[in-house]
Image 1 (cartoon, rainbow, N blue to C red):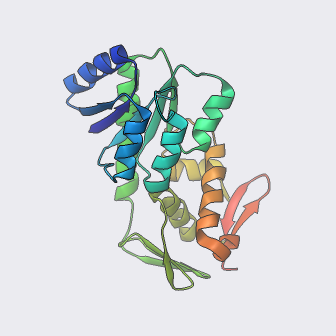
Image 2: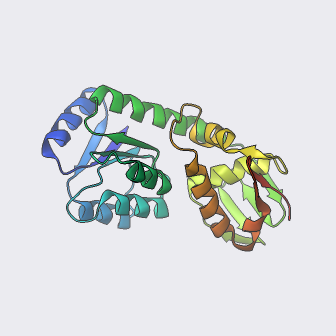
Length: 226
């Protein structure tokens, strides 16, 4: 486990580093938002998970999370003093995996990190060596590539996992809870609206073929061949 901690409170950095290292984890600390963005822009996201404060010198945590999601589906947990509902919902809208309000127990934080990484590993292990097709969309789960009308498009790992599940169940009305269980993991406790935001981004990435993902009012989504 290699954690990237983006936090400007030096005391929190010190106690978090000590606790995680005692547990056998490797942790890298960045205290400035702009420095965190430099890591992202350089493509150096070789971390297992990101712990991210919101109020930082330089770029704030929301900006950092938005930029991470453009490049990677690495798990992100906000740790912040901002506990307003609008801040929490914004965090999930940007694609965070969890949102923890300060003060927090280090033992609980570590447990959340461990559980999130275990879910990520289980989801990765579920991938099968097959090619799935539906309408204009073709998905290769071995090479982790997606083609629309024969042209390869880029998908984040989370978007790929959502599309994979929908393509395994063409024509089925899949509710949000089912997608959360199968893509985020059964012990995910975040807001279900995170599904809607990822579906929105997935449709945009698929271009014209995005219309194959239909909203089932009061239920969720389904994928058809047209």
